[in-house]
Length: 370
Ligand code: GTQ
Ligand code: FE2
Image 1: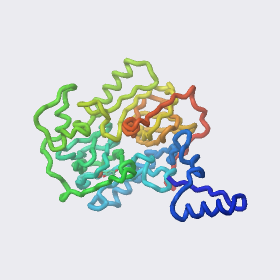
Image 2: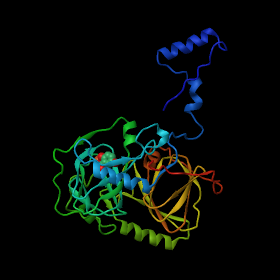
Image 3: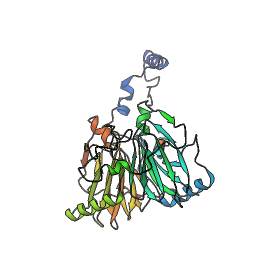
Image 4: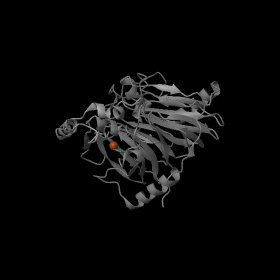
């Protein structure tokens, strides 16, 4: 955070007091009484702003990068990261969250590495790609969620005939704020992997039934979900059941660790939300940042009085304590990624429902390539 020191100016202060401020500054001390209002704000004041990146802009740029930029060591990944304009040029979607689209071409491998930040992948388009996570190749298809928890070796491999696009979410800004970023390349492009794919999934194929044998390295790490893939077909079926059972504007699922019910990663929570057409959700403020990915259908979300119209592949951000409500024009599904596990663990989680719908002050105009 940048804090501006507002030093009362001479001649309105005694020369002695002016000298005190000058001396404090010279020895890197800050008088709290001049900055307390900026620091201890009545409510959170995130620097990130509500924003949206449209699929119409993202996909063609990813395709240009695919033509021009190979995936290789050093660069590691063909990734376009969302830079929230409120964050002054940082490549972060929000103060605590990395969000990006990644593009992998036919036959390419994005080389194996590991890092202390954890990641999730939510697949938007394409086929023929798997992410190998500590020796377990996890097949990826649209609507699937794939986890690469912190410090697990991972590479992405394609034997498909078209490119794949997916959304990447990482806790990198949090890990950076904690001064705990580590990164290591694997000595080869690919790690040794099992010939059979999707072991983590096979071990949890029956709800409430865990295979006791056939563990791979890291699969039993109690700090993250042993299940590394959550299939769209299962998510869709569960949302369908839920929507049939409840007459609400929105039904929501959280993806969890099947052993413990905890969030998918210690730092990150992922959810899927199904909106019923023409029914506005209640406007709610929550602590913690959220990135939404529009997966199916179109609609709009009002965030702090600004209306964001979205359709499949669009990505938008609701910063901490912004008022958020959704309204779909047709049946629609939104994927969400948030830092709520951290806020809950630190006893900082709060939510507040607003009295009614927000007044729309403005309709957001997404950036276009000039
Ligand atoms: O695919 O391993 O968006 O390491 C950022 C850092 C993706 C990845 C990102 C990464 C990856
Ligand atoms: Fe990575």
